[in-house]
Image 1: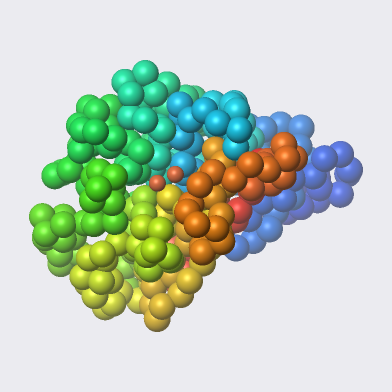
Image 2: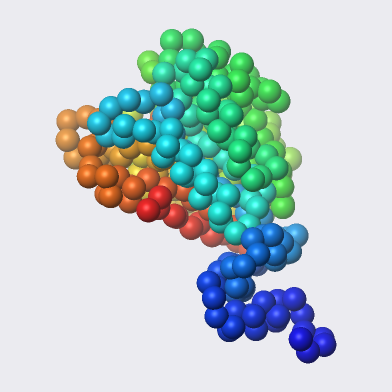
Length: 309
Ligand SMILES: [Fe+2]
Ligand SMILES: [Fe+2]
């Protein structure tokens, strides 16, 4: 190869030689690579230390049995396989709740073990209402509550982004509620941050009113929204609704994620949000993972949705 060719130029060049070419985006730049060496691809894709990449999965409902998905474990395994085949090693993987269907110790053990197979340094979770069935989240915190505060909330920073992981699902009866103790935590947590700090907020139930009639909203979220208004870039990522949905309100963009288990109806389509039975092929189309890229200094995060087809 000619001297002086940078690694990126080489990769662009190599892409012309045929074979399976993988495209990835690094710091806003698309690079191509012959897919003959996964380690090389992963190394290239993470070569820019200023680029953050993470993956969101949601609503695996391990333990669910029903015609809407007769093997949710296989579907979740498929989703994790997709993460491991992305061609880059995510900085972290976030599961936004309903890890289990019924909060049993066996279901928590199983989902924790499965998550440990992802090729990433860190796995984060927030609980769904299905992870606190009958015990207010005690078993959930036993499995996933290390290094969290209160009922399981926490925050962390990486690549100049501040992340908040909130709990709004303490029980089926109190779903869609943050509570004063958690609101105090958020207030203190955000207090020292500069307004140009990008903020990402994870929660299971949406922080916007997606469809309150079905419990697809958080009754005291406005207090958090008000605390977030002074920041120039805020992204809220949630699960619970088992379908993609995006809404922007001023400086805040909300993105509901899909599920790895089974679809729910669109808001208001039907009497209740019950699992939808689809033909097998269509089920795969309704399931997916989300990868997110952020380059330090950029205003917004880039989201990419991938179906489990
Ligand atoms: Fe769910
Ligand atoms: Fe849920």
